[in-house]
Length: 340
Image (cartoon, rainbow, N blue to C red):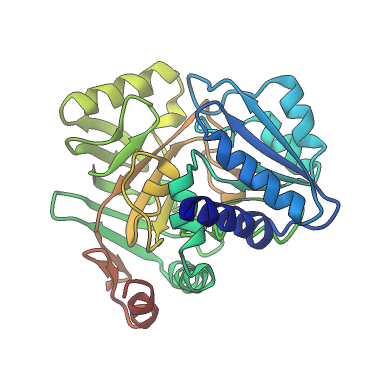
């Protein structure tokens, strides 16, 4: 019973405080068959309690991410005011998604969310305090020109930021029409592609391909001018390399964005929505690049994300994060509050 109550309260917080649902709005709760049905019902009930008009649509889980949803689902997306998008095989880079945004829909991206995650990552977190940390991280990241990322297991990567490019705080709060936001606990930006040089040792997750998820052994990526030129490791490295080649798109080898994770309740679970928000962790996306980043990659045939655990991150020679904590002067106090 206690979990039932916590889940309902977390669902209510989702539709009220994140989606900012208004009375009379058409709310589409969108999922594939990998998502828990009871949680979907909770979201719909919470939206109904706010005098909104909720609908649930579920379609068969696809083999890959970014495959277009069924036509009638795409049509429902266009006619919705708010979409809470939960498919495990996310559709973020599809025409259906873009057309819904153009039509003015507000989309809350909760890829692969399950009841335990909703309770921990939404219900039990001081969400506004976490967003306060995110706002500070945006400022610090936007002001940084030279970035150096190192880790004990061999990551050694350098790149430059372009001050004219935006840094996005993915706070998950839908304040305006025609936008999408993932769950809070992450900021993202596109570094200057040709400046990215060095080695990334991925030690938490790679997803997709779906055969991977949490890694058993690290995968080493050699990066030259923003592009993977070599992949080393065991079986998982071979799976990743084979998957990239199978896409048959050179853009899949390029870094599309970098991201900070800073969710104090995030765990390594094999679900990317949570894995890429590990506190003081870094995540890189490869392949399709949202136009909002103002980068040079653009749309590709797919997208994949990889994660680093507890790296040392330097901005212009100043240590920002180390050993899973934010240690610079501007972030130290709020870090203590969130990680007490």
